[in-house]
Figure: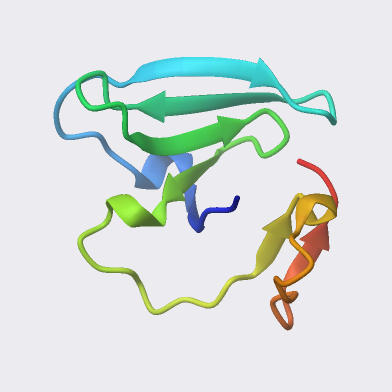
Length: 96
């Protein structure tokens, strides 16, 4: 239903081995969203969007330990489950 992502500057993330596979699709806002995933196990590592040039959406779950960070942005809030509360202080965007 949702995932936690870290927004990282494109040049701040370096792949040390392998070559990810990619899958791109348009978003409902007209941007192109590209998923970069492991070609062996299929785990999504990061995503990129033409709506956020120069930024990678790094999947927090692939990290050995999560950084001490507070969410600053929630996207696709139109799809938020009724039981899921808004993150206080986070920017709210209906779509990507």
